[in-house]
Length: 292
Ligand code: FAD
Image (cartoon, rainbow, N blue to C red; front, side, top):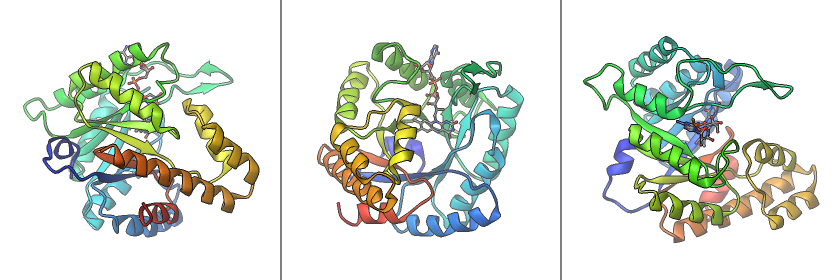
């Protein structure tokens, strides 16, 4: 199901989607194929494939998205970041993506690359994701629905944003530019999502806002990712992760139990879908989805 069908569907049952990242080499791709086969058993509406800002891994992203769509037969999406990219580079990506019959794009600015706190590059044709969405909609004018488009939303506000008001006003620009759905940054406390939904709806945004969840795989990793994207680890979860320390097997169990509770509550509140950041693993997702 592509992002625009997701938006327009009549059924009310929640949809599942997954996000994977492109493998570094062929051996990793073979492993990822095994993971994708397991994830496919949950009949996800769509599987999205990330790519590094500045165009890194773009070829691999498309290779994986094409595999999901054309070999496994599940709808897929390529993430596309615009930071540092020329208009020509973006257009080539769009054309290659279309050529592989992948019709969904997660349109993003990308993180600003920095070294020792210094911004490495701020040039490029587009400064913000709303401009990328506008461009995708304009590209090859006359076929505005070549791609369905998802954009990013931030229940704890984007790390660079001074306020929720500003961040949601900027989200509205992406929606007005032609996005079909919003997928959120990962969060560990559902209250942020519920509060965010109120603010988003108050701002007149009526698109599906799909909550993004990431089951913990290790204590260190979750602390690193959370600080990078400004996500709070609730005190209860943090305490359990500190207790298990570097025992990743136990951290995974803590993560599965926490994520399962998040899923249960979100489903009971009638969310339209859940997007899992699976980190190219399936076993934790299997445990969560078999027991909610
Ligand atoms: P924007 O929407 O441009 O927002 C960035 C900041 O600028 C925000 O603070 C916003 O409030 C502000 N802003 C937005 N528009 C304007 C405007 N017109 N004028 C002034 N200010 C504005 N990163 C990757 O590198 N690769 C990926 O594959 C990837 N996938 C992701 C998937 C999801 C679902 C999410 C939530 C994030 C993903 N990211 C990915 C991370 C993302 O690139 C970063 O969070 C990035 O810092 C912001 O991207 P954005 O598209 O939200 O940017």
